Length: 184
Ligand SMILES: [Zn+2]
Image (cartoon, rainbow, N blue to C red):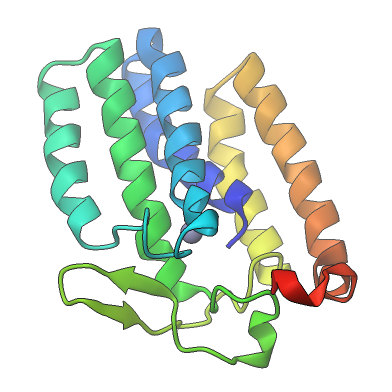
């Protein structure tokens, strides 16, 4: 899925918490945005492995969420939003396609790495590839709740993110033709 879809999923997940604790809306939003983006910084290492924790991530996300609920503050809720969104990102990569540039060719069976079982989880391909039409639709649906709950820069970021998603989804298959072979 697109980075924006992961960010919108995190913002949608923390939106009800922001309704309950409006004074902590900003740390919740910052945590969700960073948690949605952070795992994909492993593009320069082993993508979908180095910074993706679909199983271990849950063991961090649950206590972080509990701590945030018991002792709500900017640091605890920001950290909880980050941990939950980063886990959600890694876990949901399993329902997407492979990590290659042209996942629609179904060349690999690697969706995301499970560090506990020390093996790759196979791609379910409910969302066939990042930037697929269903990815764009999913992103827009996930953006609705954050748009209703947050305001200010979060609204601007979500609107901008939706625009970027749509352009990316329109150009996605052409990007491969523009990518030099050595990058694939
Ligand atoms: Zn990812």
